[in-house]
Image (cartoon, rainbow, N blue to C red):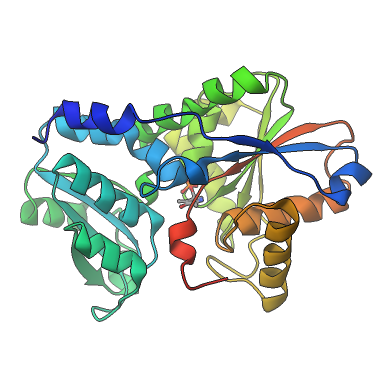
Length: 306
Ligand SMILES: *Cc1c(COP(=O)(O)O)cnc(C)c1O
């Protein structure tokens, strides 16, 4: 029964993810209040921001009676993992175009296969063409009727699911000064901007190197962001590149996880939170501010790491 009632069943389980206040000497020293929104606890399989970003894309696929779902990601992709789990639940076949070697294997890909995702491996050069019209046309020919979802699930339909986060936050924390989050493809940031309360700024920490293009990408996903000066991107805490971190940074993230009593991974949440703490130490957050860090999930990708 791949119809809308499956989707309703899946998403009616949604409860607000927990909000926790964090304690750390640095916060006291700089007179900051910091909460964390634990979207890593939203769903046990469809992790964090991918649960929110996929919500209305999945509904669209079901209401259009798509033949299946096809998307793109790396070998540890939280997005492909979430998509495979969702497709399995909803009775929709899934295809994952994976950047990597055909013999690649790891717990992420094992799960995806177990949930019935067909994996097609492509080399880096081919993967770079993931937005090219001619490759997309070829994929449509090979998988007729499939909904093709961009990498990371970041498309305009991803925005309303993310925007719903503000209702959850607003009920408990009505007077936030700033929301801080890790950013990779920009969809989560764009979704937050699409419903930002005027008094709450949004600051994204890019987890990849040379991400000067990201601001433009956020504006492509949500054009009014171009006229909004209530948000900014931090580009200098990439730690050497996507999924890269020095041994010292990894150790610092592991230490933060212990001090804050929150599970972190080094690719997204841990890298961004470390960047936030370094900026706090540098005095880049005004004393008295009320901050919220969004834990975007992704703990599945860290199995065997950190
Ligand atoms: C995908 C992902 C992100 C990045 O979100 P974007 O919307 O692509 O910017 C951040 N954190 C985690 C855990 C993710 O899986």
